[in-house]
Image: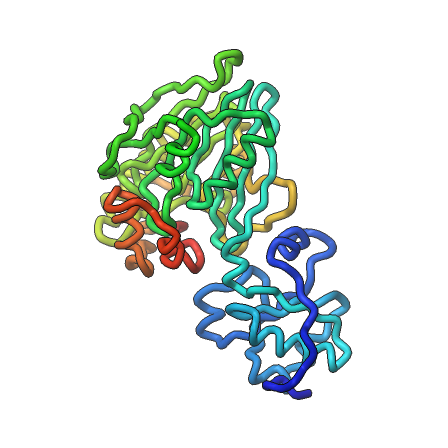
Length: 369
């Protein structure tokens, strides 16, 4: 089989959105990533198998499958050649149109019905970022929005909600926040924890503050200061039934000090936040974090989340004493990731986000311990 350049026919493709809708279902394809190993190691779709294009002919047995194959590269060019070659060898293969660049822009949603309130989880699949539209009556809050603010405006419009408040759970370092832009577009109030150094107008959150959600409902959101990931990290409790935990607690572990500069100090704060604040909240409340890792399965229409009781039973760090936790977490603090300084500068208020800011965000999230 010739996997090199040539005059192959145009390879049939699948869009990144179509792929996202199939992952986590019985129709999930085998993902074959034909980029070079260093590209694959830096950022890949969870579950993908790396077979570099130059090795594809010799490793064809690794691609044989009883299901459809989707071929991935950076922008769709190398994978198109690989797809054509695989189809020439009788393998049912599709090219991921636009490659990882297209995957970076894919969103989908899942709903959590809380009775009087509803939470729409907005998933940025290529980044592992989760954000939320929390609505009751005719009003909604948005928590941790990305730059693609049209996603949140569309969700609110579909649900018949008007966005009245926008919140960030902390000063983000791995992606550019859309909170300022969304608040301006929606005419909403922007709420942030002043323990993180924001340098633009906003309403400061106070520990234990209760924010009403809709004049005709009894639903509210309580903000808890949970320093540790950053000094201004916060957790938002929705009606006693859901916890928007930012980067303080994930469904597969706890957050990590952000970052290595003050690792021991931040780790000690994080332990206190988890034990004094978070695990004291209702055990049947659903934990909804701001990120998920590669090991977390994502299925269409089902939120990425787990009850606090489930996490208390399966996340060992939630049972550890302070010093063992501090030793463990501070040793796992990482050097600053690519573009950290530029992203933090923008999110602090150094400049308004622009379309050019998107280039800073490419790659996986790096927020878990």
